[in-house]
Image 1 (cartoon, one colour):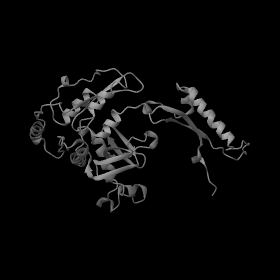
Image 2: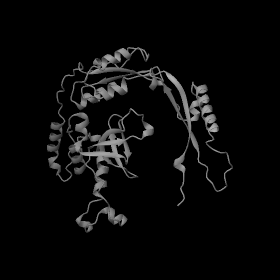
Image 3: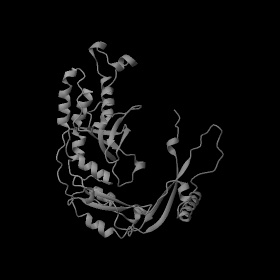
Image 4: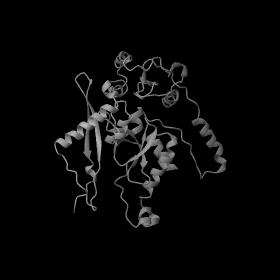
Length: 338
């Protein structure tokens, strides 16, 4: 546990990450030689092959996890920022803690910056927690000293007063429901979604928590265009970065239009007739240009599938101009002869 405690202290992560630190330590320890194993590593003794350590990185470093293009649009970031907490269990890759999503993800597409501490970069400072000190080789006569040390380390500190005059309160209506989400943005640019988030934020920054200063109940109705002027006034503050406001505030008709991804979604869409008409035009165009010939496939041939791709064209005023659909072949399934 000495190594685990040291890793947590150096990284600034909370004690609840002890299991991640332990797993990362065991992963590294199994790839280190020892004098009792005659210069061989435990992994080498078990598998018969000398393991590689090129993938080893500093625990708690700043990490960027790549987001596949199918999970984002053109304006969303290509990576999520997090903290390296270890290595993948059953596959190649790393384990990264994403503070905004409050979960650990495993991915091989990770860029790690070992020159930056993840906690310090994301939260402004590294907080050293009072970890329990276990001295297994101490005599029972020294128990009183340990208890005195624990009581001293656990003595409460006077938290600073909380001033939310510099905070920003934002009400964001949902697209597919009448619910309105309320967020608070402190000067650290962190988004707080509930009173529990505020409480945890105050505990991390040693601030006095007063729930009466916060109101997570919406004061407006879910009318997309009515809040446009209010959002415009909120963007004048520089305490929250511009990218967060673009994702949270900027609402336009072009982004509110639902574009189906599959044929089944077009059949349950309120614009079903328009999508059917667009697909009929595409098939008619392909027939007129004689794009393909209808033939019977041989028994030893594998037929490639196809799928529909949909889009909506807008004019210069963002009004819907045309519904478009394209039939594309799944060329990635092609097997070329060797």
